[in-house]
Length: 392
Image 1 (cartoon, rainbow, N blue to C red):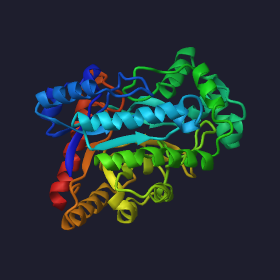
Image 2 (cartoon, rainbow, N blue to C red):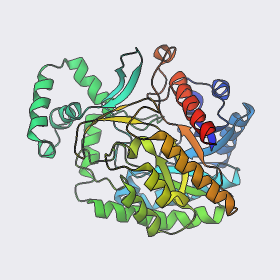
Image 3 (cartoon, rainbow, N blue to C red):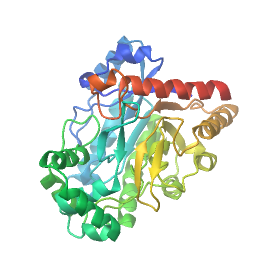
Image 4 (cartoon, rainbow, N blue to C red):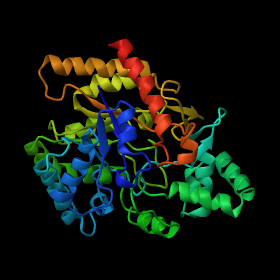
């Protein structure tokens, strides 16, 4: 498997020379300065590619080429946004950019956490999702109509009690954590923005959103295939409904539907163990054995569940210490690589990155992009590298 590292461009507090010292060979990044719905220009792609290559690294994966809310809801300028997405693929190929393009189809928010730096016993910090804190936000701070009905009575009561003990500063911090926008993006949203965006999904069921995804893929996959690109959809994070919004990429069955909807070597999967692994029914080995040929990109991350049922609290753990059996997962991925290589597939080596990490040591002072510290991810990469070396 090929070691890659997510980098958020020139604004990232972690530099390309520092990334090179981690041992990672490839960079995963995007043109974060380009507004969603606009075309990625050839000159911008060439400039980013040259910057990466000047540090003796390669740009291996685009993460992400954003899919606008207009496309997801099929409103406003959604057709123009699809055309811009298609043209961005063309321009990426003209510039000799990455063959792998990651995207997500999550409504409004990307990954959602209630704490971006929860204290750990050893002095470091981790990202966490607390269901009661989220209920505080949804029911009381956002005040979404009907929000209370989405939570058990015990959670409603606990949320009311927690709210009563929160200062104005802690309430503001909770809202900021949840409504921070996309990782690496320049924009973030206010509570009013979120309420307005939520209204746009009032009539959109999971079935309708899944159809919109299929419609999107029908437009972009043929272009990607003609260019030799591989598109890969990232799972919902967390993999259960929030804010009354539909979730359509949360489990293996959802991904089977995805690849069946538009059959093509260009239509594939970002296999994120940290997102999918929050569900207690996630079986990573079965997922890889069932859908492995469609996996184009891998995020290796682990979590610890706190609770039962579909929706629960969770903490981002050490890469080898959570609820997902990472050794078995890597074994299945290495077997998938061997199967590809035996048939001569050109993508016989899967790009992966150590996804997220604890803030450790100097990370606590650097305060890089939440979830993306230098030392914490380096530790995770070393652990994963060791497993791969042992399994050979």
